[in-house]
Image 1 (spheres, rainbow, N blue to C red):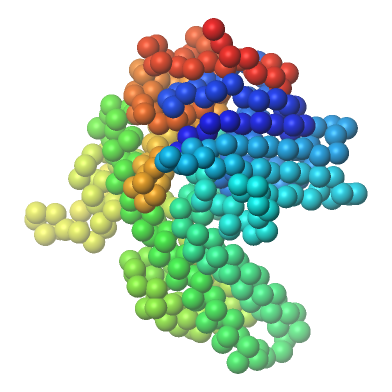
Image 2 (cartoon, rainbow, N blue to C red):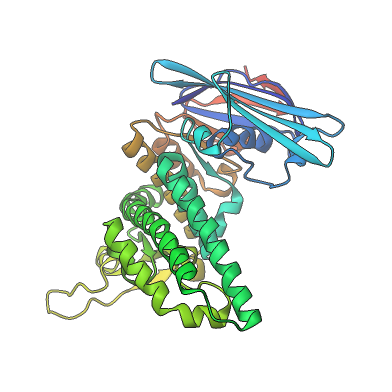
Length: 399
């Protein structure tokens, strides 16, 4: 998958056509507020159908303009695909229109999965510094690009969860008993959707841990191992059969009904799952982290020598951990879809030492990548970079 062309009109401060990108590493150079991150944002629109920086779509339209357009031409195998997004001011609101190959797309699910991208921004350090919600977003965003069924299941889960919580809150306030038939239907629907979400997250995290651990070692050259572990609710975290998982989850909701009524909300479910990120001291500790019930040669339970990356990892370890996870995300997409996504990396090299810059450029070799940079002195040497200057929302190919 390759970006062949990107055109913008009145998108934030951008208007114009991006110079041709190479199949390798492309660098957008320019001062702060020149439009570099805006360009990455415009590209990523086609991966998730929304901005990664704001939920207020009016901010995406240049001041004083009534509409904005972004058009991308992709090469997928031997075929070219054309995708467009238009934002038009409609009174106090904004209307968004999407199209693929000239045909309007009504559902977001029909837009997703055509263009796939892996995004890194400085804000993604929240993967190790922030709460569980940030790490759930990581899995959801990746899975929405590669598993259309996941999009539907996640939307169903969130919709039914909202209905169940609203009903529980109403019962708590009124003090009335629940309608058993209605709450049973809600719990069954919630269980069916939750089983798909939990299963897909489990499978994704299993692959993520294996690949991210290798990427971390290659990136840092250290003996420490990065471990990623999915902590699901109840017994579902090790189940890969959706029917069985759904049945167990329905039992969990039935048993927890009284406590949920007291809380006025649903306590159990994938909306409370966690993606645990650890830096293990060595290979044995990493194995113990991922297999806590495994015994050692003496028949004793393996002792963990690990620490949570967000609590004890240094700034360098945290950044390297997030980068390793992002690189692993790209490898998983390649394994499941047959093609690499485009890597979009914002303000990256300035925070890495020269050795890690070189290692990262080697890991990105053969993958279309777009990186933003303010200072060209931070760029790795001999990486065959394609430089594009950005100034006031305009592009110029470097000589």
